[in-house]
Length: 116
Image (cartoon, rainbow, N blue to C red; front, side, top):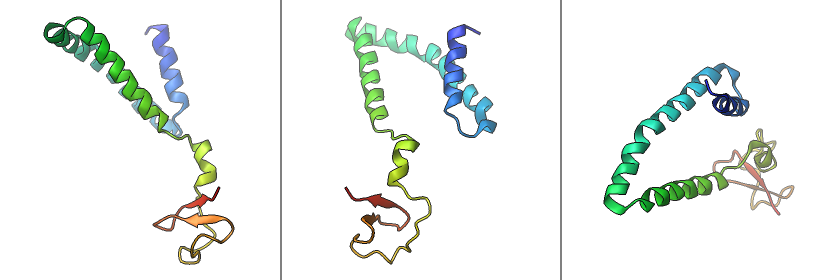
């Protein structure tokens, strides 16, 4: 196994909370590498034939831009922790209008959001 691939696997496994599922998750990563090597040449060839050689690069940049946009919407658990109360101390019907302790109740009654 190439060393850069080992580094990616270790980086991926570091973010998995339940260590029981690490082999399964690494299997998905390796499957994704193989699938990308299998699917990319026909897609690049089709783009090259229909739209010219620059189309493959534009397609790659578009996929990267979509991926970056999606990653910007991901919130890490440690950042989201102050916004989400795991066990609300006040029952769902007890807060009327959100004026109790500077918190607002979200529909569903299981999440408290700090008011800024």
